[in-house]
Length: 247
Image (cartoon, rainbow, N blue to C red):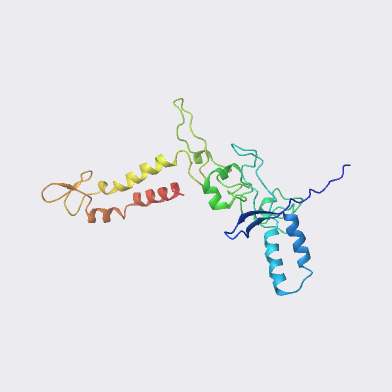
C-alpha cells in the first residue's frame, strides 16, 4: 500500500500592499494557520484567546457534499460544496446524509426525501431550500413532494411543438420556469380588464363597454366600478394564480 505524502504548504505571499509599502493583505496556507492555532492554545493571555477564536472560525469545516454533475462550461461541480458548518472534516451536514445509514431515524420525517441537484439551476429552489434537501412536505402516501412525485394534472401541459407534444415539467410546487411568464402576462391583463365584466354604477357603461365622461369621451375605469370588481371571486382566483406564478 502506497504511503500518502502530505503536500507541503505554499509559502505565504503578500497580495496587496498599503501606500507606504507595508503589507495590507497576505495569502497564507491553511496548514500554517492550523499550526498557529495549535500554538495559540498554549498561550492564556486574552489577546491570544481572541486570535485563537478568530482562527477557529476561519478553520471551521463545512459539509463537503457537491453535485455529481459538472458545470456547463467547467469541470467543477454544478452545485456545491454545500457550505453548512459541521463538526469535523469529511462530514456531511444532517440534510446531506441521505440516504440514512442503517436504522437511523429521519430527522425531517414530514419532508420530501429528495436531495436537490438539477432543481438548483432555478433560483426559486435555492431561495426556498438553501441548496439542501427538498424543503417541501411529502404527498400523502408517498415519501416525495408533489414536485418530485407529480400527478398527471400537475404537469405543465403547455405545447412545445406543432406535433402535439406538451411540456412535462412538474408544477406541484413551482410553476414551469419556461412557460410561466406567458401565463403571468395573460392573467395580469385579465385582472386589469376585470371591471369590464360589470356595469359601471357611475357612468352607466354596460358590461364590456369602457367608462366615459359626461361628454362621451372614454376614460379609465371609474373608482366605483373598480371597487365593485374587488368582491368578485374571479379576482381572488386570478390574484392567487399571479402570486403563485410570481414565486
